[in-house]
Amino acid sequence: MTAAITIGIDPTIELGPLTLAWHGLMTAVGVLAGAALAARVARRWGLPTEPTVSIALLAAVGGLVGGRVLYVVEHGLLDAPAQWLSTRGLSFNGGFVLAAVAIAVYVRRARLPLRYLDAVAVALPLGVAVGRIGDVINGEHYGPETTSFLGVRNTHPDASVPSPDVAYHSGGLYEVVLGLVVFAVVWPLRDRIRTPTLLTWMVVGLFGLGRFVEFFWRSDSDTVALALNSAQWTSLGILGVGLTGAAVTWRMASAPRTHGPDAGRR
Image 1: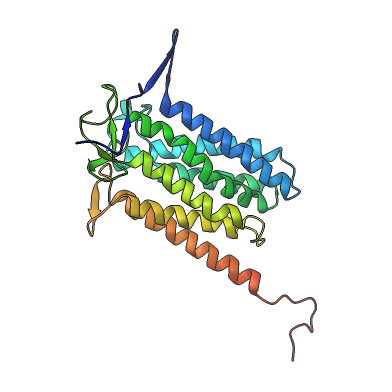
Image 2: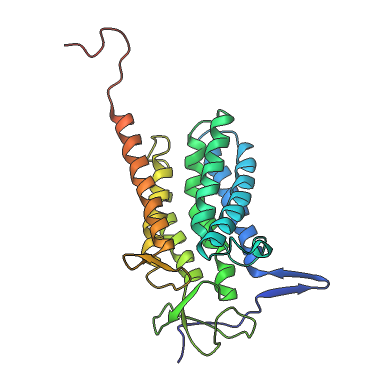
């Protein structure tokens, strides 16, 4: 079988005594790219850029901790404490949710304008797309064998796929594509949608929808109910939060404002 995409890169980079994994390296590059773009958007909107540094750190820590916690829960590792701190295995949805909550709490406690959330949301998809390149190189999050033009064959013997001779659905590649698609949707709208948090809810909903669809071609999440796996149910929850948040925000922005005791009376 000939894969449409063939990758033979070693999953690790040896620099003398230092060993770097493409997964961690590209995740770091993705965080930096997202933070730089968020700062650029904030500056464009007339906001100080200093808070974007703290937000980037919260996104990185929340993404790692939340991703690992949900992975442990989904894969039944709660009774195996020795594996809790393993560097392999992260759930995007868990990291996405915890990072979002941490950033929202920080913005609220620091009394920052809500437009900071939108600046981060606009930059997030690009950061995700860049960060997931490491998963593609490593052969992580693979699905069933495929002859699709998006199939990936990882030929390096240290790649995570079962066989170097077979093309698989690549969850990492689908994450890259999803990030780029969401970015292509929201980037042109960054100056058109001025209602605070509306862009944020849009990004949340698009990621929830995209990952729900994506997991029909991935096999790294167990089926739990109605032929849907745990990642899809989590994604539906994220989609629901995005839709609800957008609806509430739109309703509040569209509600007539009163400016005195007689305002609105007929």
